[in-house]
Length: 266
Image (cartoon, rainbow, N blue to C red; front, side):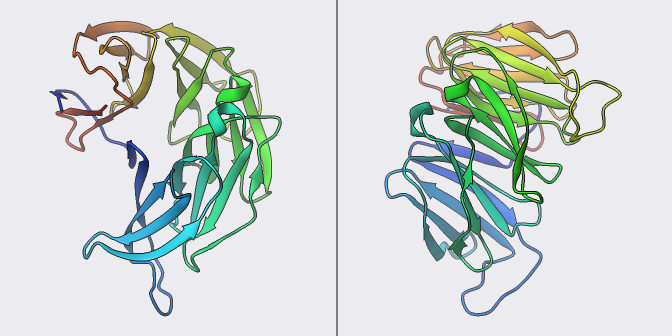
């Protein structure tokens, strides 16, 4: 594991066949309740979501999910989990899990957006990449509808990051070796349609894992192919630096909470 000085973390990361996420819950329930601070672990091989008490490492629940699950995110209130069912870009489903009662809810059909992969929960909505459709999309749990999407035109649109106000969307395009920067119109309030802009920044083929600094000014992404880290200056939408870190096979990148180091899994 190599470390690199700079800025911030995100709330989930993936290592090999498991994706882990901490969730914070503000409720209690009866027997075997989900703890207020919990870990949800997604197994691709066994097709299950596991809820773990991180203080005791005790498994609270195992919930079956769909074939080829890849990423998981919890809602802001910690009551619901959303899972992307990927299928190498061929599938078109988000699984929805009730984290209070430990049971599956109605799945979301993402068609015409295929291959959901990267996923996050911002401003009350689920945002996801759609690799098979070279796009990103958004699902509104309140209306049970897909309410926005935008194409990238890039190959293997894979991971996704959305600013807290829902006005900026960033995604890595692995095979194209680029990062897409999608910006809402300045006059637009979050959640509405409008003339979004799209800038494509060349990085390196294999750019996948990435994170954004705490001040929102930089995006760091690692390439699995050549082991480099590309640093994008977000205000200018240009590469400001490239580190020959030799992190070959890199698939995730995350800033530490104090912003002093970057961790990369490979």
